[in-house]
Each structure stands twice: as structure tokens, then as C-alpha cells.
Length: 142
Image (cartoon, rainbow, N blue to C red; front, side, top):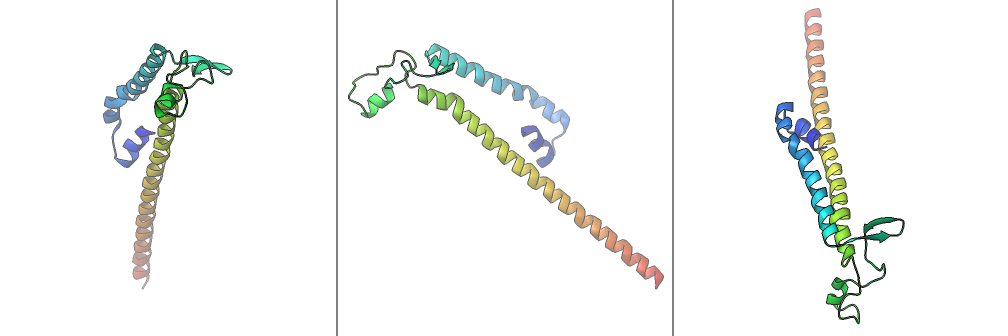
């Protein structure tokens, strides 16, 4: 999506985009490695119904975040593993997912508007040239 935006909206050439191509691969892969390793080191991976994912253990434990907010009678978390799993799940999965979806939507809207504007400009020029040609023919006939 980003490549289309750079080419269509900003007129980048293939050689300019090729210089950035390594970053198109490095950034998402680095994000995946960093978040996966962080979740592993912080012992966030646990059984989550039918799969293994960022989840608390036991599933109904109270996270330290809830304890610190004072939403419980506990003085410390009763999670064995996966403390604050909901926060990590949101930060490592849902926030990047929705940011990516929003980025794609905005990018496609910008590309669509740019193409629509270009198409309208082309149609105006084409009509103008057609009208000019028709006027020339009618002047010659007179």
C-alpha cells in the first residue's frame, strides 16, 4: 500500500522505492521478533482456549494492573504467568493490527482521490481538445 502511495501520489520512481525496500521488510520483521521475544521472556505465552497465545494463567487471575488500580481486594496478583496479558495482547497484536488496517484505508483513499483527480483532469483536457478541434473544423467549413 505504501509503495502505491509513494508512486501514485508523490511520483516516486522505482529506483527511489528500491532504496527503501529493505526497510519495508526489516521494520515488520523486527517488530515481530521483538514482540515475540518480549512476550516469551515475560512469560506471557499460555494456553488460551484452543491455542497458545498471550494469556494469563490461570485464565481468571487478577492482573497486577487491576490490583494497583484498587479494583480488587487482593494486595498482589494471583497470576502464575501472563500478568497483564490483556495489556500485552492489545499492545503487541490488536493495536498494530488496527493501525495497519487504518493505514491501508487512509492510503487507499488518498490513492483513489489522486487517481480520480488525474482522471478528471484528463477528461477536461480531452474535452477541451475535442471542442477546439470541432471549432477549427466548423471555422474551416464557413
